[in-house]
Image (cartoon, rainbow, N blue to C red; front, top):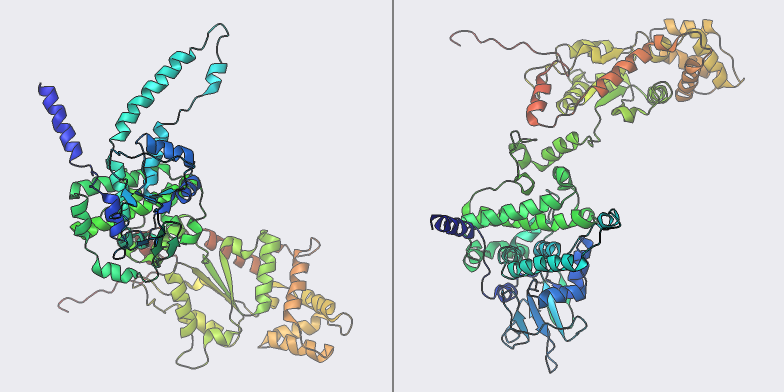
Length: 597
């Protein structure tokens, strides 16, 4: 007797957590107009919807399940005997088909009506998309899976008792039939989701930044849903969550249990469950292109999110994300406060998945000729485009752009750009010719403090490389430059290493070299083409100078290492540690306050 009482108490405790079916819930949904943001689907539409989500169902089987009392639409309509206006949703005055007996509620447990044949076109049933969770359960229980190979892999002397097997299978099906016929919990969850859909469903149709809030229009031979005049913002203003609470007998415990159940169901069937932080940022239209279980999980997750929002409105309490219901989360990655900012949240998520397209290092060079040279070296020496290393090449145009023209603005612009890039954890490396104020820029960087971090300077001086003379003269001999200029001139002019040496000794060697070429060839020096020829000669196996000894190779090797070794942060805490480290900029000494100050 004690065990019986104990079991009864446990059953009562479980029942206290389970939603039950309200009387005429289907009619309440229709009369509340709760079919605009998330329309009810006719039979053929619902079958198509289910198949797209991996449920094996057709019209004949759907009607058979209804005949057995296992699964039914939200409501049914029949064709009136006389011509009449369609059943309008939202319901218009004098047009309520429920009162005219042309529509009837189907959400109860027992029905005393004749289920139409699957070929019957005089009736139509309308289903909620959220019923697929319960339909999946029914199909699983009523579908026999047999491993035929187990019968093939047997001793030939052993006979198969198909009669016994069949009776066993039918006995099991019968027991499940009786249990499912009286099942209310999952049916109630689906109907509750539909009832609150006008208020909450648009909130689930978004990419964490925007949502889809419009209502549409649908009509067939029986009903006409007009959502053109419906405004979601008006729905929000007029919404009273207690209406749903009263109708479905919701309590804090019941709603929490329903939410957990739907959240677990979506996570269990979703092959992309571990990617939910990423997929939630994908456009709704693209997520709609998913197939099978992944698409079914999208529907269930929408339902779970709606229950979570209802819970928040009713009890002013936040439930965990649907994909964080099961298991114990020791550390949230990224942190929960970060998730209030969708842009920052997305940044950390794509960092974790290795999908952030932002550069790991910005390499700032003086002109397009240096850009072409660097890109050719990466492709031919390193074997990959700079983008493969996460390197972006920024062309300044001249040293003056970097150093500034006005006295008060000199150095400030480029150093602020470097500081900004370092703030976003993009290493910045600067390569300049030794012209004008380039050396002063490097000196200024030693004392320039970051405005984004109080713990470091803007950069490290070794991240600024100033050529002793110029890119061409530091990396190629005068004879190599002269040979390249001769190849470029194509016989219209000739140059000697002695002439190039004179240019190298000039205070502005780059400008002197251009003047020499223009004087002898009668047209301007094509620096981009010249650098391409120089790089080809440098890569040549007959080059006298080992390529790894060229200064530009040593610089780019360091640049490549910095880029590869730059792990983008997946949490705000990690980002803060990186900002305070010595890698982005030299660390500043903490300011000591005087006693009594």
